Length: 513
Ligand code: XMP
Image (cartoon, rainbow, N blue to C red; front, side, top):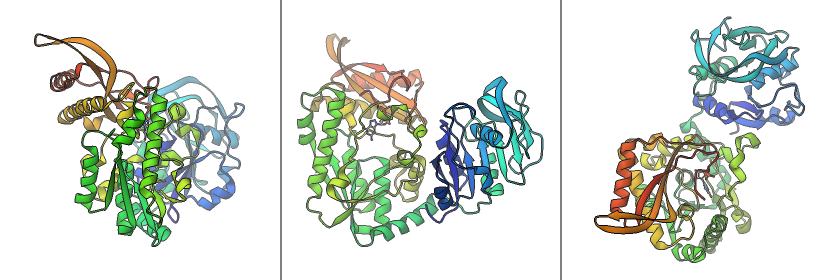
C-alpha cells in the first residue's frame, strides 16, 4: 500500500506480532510487519508515521539477541516498544533489565500513575495480559514510569517529549481488555495518523491499482472454491470486467455440491464468465491404488497443474495469473510462519506462472483473512460463502485415509454435509474455525436391527484457531455429538461408527494427512 499512512511493526520473534498488525488495522490505520533487521534505507522509503517494536522470546543481553541495525529511537518517529521492545528501550537508553523478582504470566491489573497520551482514557486497574520473565530494574535516561502493577513497579514508561513509549504488557492480545485503546492512542494521538483504512478504502485503491497494472491485458484466475480466490476474482472483475477469465477445476474431491455452488455464484449471482473443467477421471485415475499421504498430495498437485495448463493453452493473449495470496504468506519474518510450515508439502499451483510465462496479480498480498472476508462482504458475496471454514487444496483426497475410491468419496461427502448441517443448526459453525469429517480405512463390527454390520469408521474433527498454525480441539456439546453420530450412522450406508477427535495442534495437525 503506497501513499497511505502506515505504522511499521518490527518483528523480534513474538508469537503475537501478526496480532499487533491486525489490531492496529482494526482501529483503521494500515500497519505492516518487517523483520527487526530492516535496513535504514528501506525504513525511510516506507516512511512510517510510527514504529512498534514487537515482543520476542530473547533477553536483550543474550548472545545473538535480535537488535535493529540502527538506533530506532533517534529517527524522530514515534516508537512503542512492547515487552521485548520495552527492554530494547532500556538497553539503548542506559536503563537496566533484570530477571524479575516475580515473573508475570497472565492477567495483571495495570494502574496509571502519570497522565500521558498513551494511557489516556484507560481505567484504573485495567486488565492487561503479561508474559515476561525479565523486567525493568533501572529507568532509562529521560524516561518516567507511567504505569505499574502489583508485581511490576515499572510496567509502562514514557519519554513524552520524544514520543517514545514502552509497555511490559501485550496490548494486542484479546485478554488485554483495554489494549486496543492503547494502540489507538499510540497511532492516532501520538503518531498523528488521520486516514481511515478499511475494507471500503482498500477496494477503491485496489481497483485503481489493478487497472493501472493490467491495462487492457487479459487475466486468468483459478478458482479453488475457497474464500480468497473467489473474493479476488470478484474484485478483479469489478476492476476490469470481461478481461478476466475464471477457471474452476472440479477435482471430484470437493465437498458435496461445491463445484455447482461455485458455478452458480459466479454465473447466476455475479454474471462472471467461468469455465468449469471436469477433472474426475484425471484425479481418480492418478490416485488409484495410492495410499501414501505425501504421494497423494503430489499427484493431486500435479493433476491441478496439468489440467489448468491444458485449459489455458488457447488463451495466448492472457498475460496475468490472479491468485488469492494473503499477507501471512509473504511476511518475511520466520516467527509468523510457525513450526508446521514445512511438515506437509502444501498443494498450490506454485511454479505455474513461470511455466506459463505469466505475471502474478495478487491483490490481497497485504491483507489478513478476516480482512479478505470483509472485502468479500462489501463486494456482495453472500455471508454463508464468505465465512466458510478453510478447505485444503487436495480436498477430500487427504481426508480419506489410505486408498481413495469413488464410493468412499461419496460416503465422506454425505457424512461431512450432515456434520456441517448439524453444527450450523446448533448455532456453532461460526464459533469453530474448521470442522470436517474424515473417513478411516478401519472397519468394525456393529449391529443394526437384527443384522451384523461391518463398515467404516468416520472421525469428526472441529478446532478453534486464529491462523491454523496452532489449534485447540473444540469441546462439542454432547447433545450435538449425539445427533451427528446417529444421523451419520442411520443415513449413510458404509459407516457404522463415529468417533470425535480430541487432539490439539501441536502435537496433531488439523488435517489427518
Ligand atoms: P495442517 O493439517 O497442516 O493444516 O495443520 C493447517 C491448515 O492448512 C490447511 N491445509 C491446506 N491448505 N493446501 C491448502 O491450501 C494444502 O495442501 C493444505 N494442507 C492443509 C488445513 O485445512 C488447515 O486449515
